[in-house]
Length: 111
Length: 113
Image (cartoon, rainbow over all chains, first blue to last red; front, side):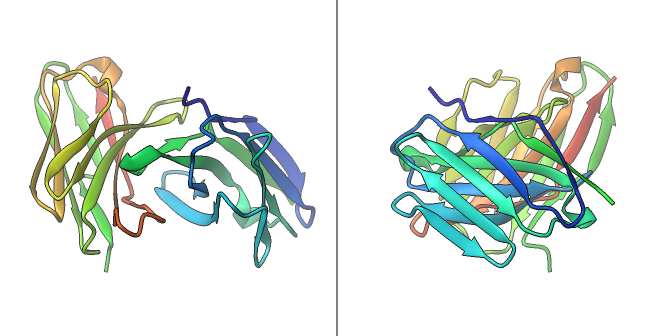
């Protein structure tokens, strides 16, 4: 199947860490991605991880991949109000390079 | 200099009309895509072209017809628009051989009334 699941909503206070979780189904995915969508805007690639990696850190962002459980997470340290957006995980499916997106998590950052 | 640009940004039209959305990328990529985002924010691929050839055609009504006149352009034509076609349509591009990042346009918000 091609279901990529995320929790729908996460609320945190400014300065706290946010952790957004994602489960995917295609064990042959080569890359897994996190995209950010601000209101009324397009999709911005935040970070990605190759499937043979367990962790990737990029400034305030940490991606963890548990390939056995097909679980991906995005941790945002020191969350700011500007981080409020919808976050989509995505897996790259097979030879066609199509992206299969998760259901999206709305992150609300309270001042 | 916009990498992936779509026009128009907003489109309001009546049921039954035919409309087109245009997409252009200046990244030199060989693969372009159309994705649809519905009112619940679910994103799903519709079509993909590689070097002007159709390589992905998901279960999409045949009222939707993509056209790729060259590698840098992928247009989406929709016939006999229905209320359920209301959504945000995103164009994207990537380089198949490198295969890491897909760049997205800003989206076209289509509203059918």
